[in-house]
Structures are given as C-alpha cells and as structure tokens.
Length: 489
Image (cartoon, rainbow, N blue to C red; front, side):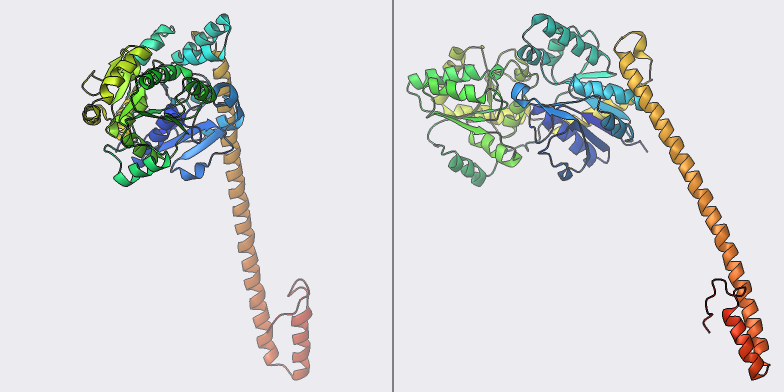
C-alpha cells in the first residue's frame, strides 16, 4: 500500500487574511486531508484567527502587523519555537507558497528533517517589491535574494505559463512545472433565492447590466482602467451598475477616484466577502466580470466567475487571460480604458450575448480544486521518489546559514530523543524497583498473616488467662505488626 502524503504547507497569508494564495493553501490542506493524507499549515500569527474550525493542524509562527504598509502580517521565518514544532511533525514533503519568509522557514525545516521542498510561484513579486521599496539598488538586491531563495527549492511550480515567463525575467534559470490552481466554487449558478438576497442587499436594479470585480483593492489590479471605462459609459448615457468586492490598502483612494469621476451613484464597494456561498451568489447575479489586471499570474477569480456562468473581460496577453478564447468564452482587450469602454457599450446593448459567453466559460474554463490537488499529489510523489539530500552549502552562500539552523535543530532533536530514551529507561527501572518492593511487601504480609493465624490457633487451646495475654501480645507487639497498630479481627 502506498504511503500517505504528509505535507507541510507554508505561506505568509491564511484566513482570516484572505487572498488568492491563502485560498489556494486552504484548499490544498482541505483536500489533502480529505483524501486520507496528512496536511499541516504554517502561517504567521493572527490575533483574529480561529484555527479550531479546520480539519487539519495549523501552526502559527511569530509575526508583526505591517498591514498598513503591505496589507499583511509579516512572519518571522527564524521563530525557534515554530521551527521546533514543525520539525517534529511527521512530514515527508514541504510546500512553500511565498518566496520570501515561507521559503526561508522551509529551508531551515528541510535541513532539520531532510525532506524535499516544493515552491509555487503564484504572484509577480517583483511588482510587490517595487511598490514597497523605492530605491532601485535595494529593489534589485531584494529580487536577487528572492531568486536565490527560489533556486534553493527542490521543485519549482508556476500557476501559469505567464508566471513562468515572469520568473525567468527576474533571473531564474532553473526548471519549473506549470501547476494550475483550481476553484472551490461549485460549477453552476447559485439558487434564485440567494441571487435575490444579493440584489436586495446591494439595492441592485435588474433592468441594468451588473459588472463585477472581486479581489484586492489595489491600483495595480487595473482598477483605474475599469473606472475610466465606466466614466465613458456614463457619458454615453448607458445604464449600468458596478460592484467591487474586496479590501486593500488602496481602497480609500479608489473610492475617492470613483467619486471624482461622478460614479458614486453607479459603483458599490462591498468590502471583503468571506462566505463562499454568498460570493457564489454574487458571481451568479452579475452579467460580466471586469478584470483588466496584468499583475495576476493566474487570475483565480476568472475561474471562479466562470464556474458560476460569468464571462470576463481581460487584457490580451495577460496571465489571467491564459486559456480564454476571445469572443468564445471571454473578451480580450487592449490595456486601455477606451478598449474596455468600446466592448462594454456593445455588450450592454446585447445582454443575451453576455449570458452566452458566460455559459461557454462555465463549460470550458472550469477546473475544480480536487482536480488540481490530485495532479499536485502525483507530482509530490515523483519529487519524493527522486529526492536525495545534498550539501547545497558548496554552491549557494546563504545555504550555510540555513544549514547551520538545520544542524542546530537536528542536534536538539537528537538530544531530545536521547533524553526521552533515558527518561523512559529510568521510568522502567523505577517501575521494576517498585514492583520488586511490592512483591517483597506482599511476601512479608503473607508471612505475617501465617504467623498471626498460627498464634490464634494456639490461643484457642489455652486457658482464658493465657488467651487474653496472647491476644494482647498479638494486638500490640510491634514485631508482629510494625507501626504499633491494632490488628483487626
């Protein structure tokens, strides 16, 4: 019988922090556990987290709140308690989903327990780095460190061909495997009652087309293109509604920009929606999904929308547009507001066409997480089969650092095992001694009982005077009953 997988999934985001990668890790863990494997998730500590709701184990490592800067809690990949806890788990593969802290933590653990580490490249991290760091030299140094981290992994996955191209552009020269993500939204539209709940909650008008965006509220998601295109539609007098679902550090600026374009009466900002069934109803209520992002490497939300029969408008050549055929199961445009507005004007006059595109998207683009994780599981087994621990210190300078951490925790693990063994041996010795003393005490009690019975038998044949003396002797003689206590008759 094939050995079950024991996978340690490490990432910088996990619920209650919601984004595409956190959703991917959640589904990997859920499905691996459901398939009788063992899944462990390691994520930064979050005071609002309730990990008791998951059917798999979650270990939280030290973190600091930098959400005002980058929208996340930053984890400490050198947290000794977390390294110790994770290293004691029965893992046979590590899967990191962030090329910075997650891979750093994974490298220390790999050196400790000697199992392979897989890495998935989900996001164009060079854009995040350039948004977070203004100095060009520091940007280049950070990108080089990121690539070195990725190169240290035993198997590299990307979520799309475009993601692989982006990784190559950063200087990565190793091999990689395209491993697409799935969606956890069931195939098919939500019930009419749930759709009506969405319409009532957001005061939507059935007579006007409803456009939708779901994701982080960040400018680099192409949201400015969407707002500028909608402004052109409004100037043309075309009725429409726009629903934005998500949160992010640019949300306030985006809302102000929409107001400056006189779109406040047409745009609804719903914030983050965590209920997946309700989100499915939102997808089902919309006519078209607007996602002009060139940042995303996979566009998971595009597949989620397709699952509910909702087609997308995407930038031609973007990663999110991979697998989408123009005018067949989606619409591909140039990266301009004018290009989007032109398409929207035509489709608003033909809502049946939007419905037809949505039905095609549901049939042609849908991929469940079960299908995706099944493919990943097969790859895990291949990686495990061919894995041989190697001394990477010879060709990567920073490996010396992680190897020293791994060696330290390996030594600690051996010390702990030795201590536990010695404790077990000591406990056995004590148990044997107690048993020996107990056996001796039992034999002594048996001997004393025999003497007592013999004296009582003799006393029965004696005169009453002598009998009383014997009874007194039996009751109070300390040699017969140590402790000077009376013998109960």
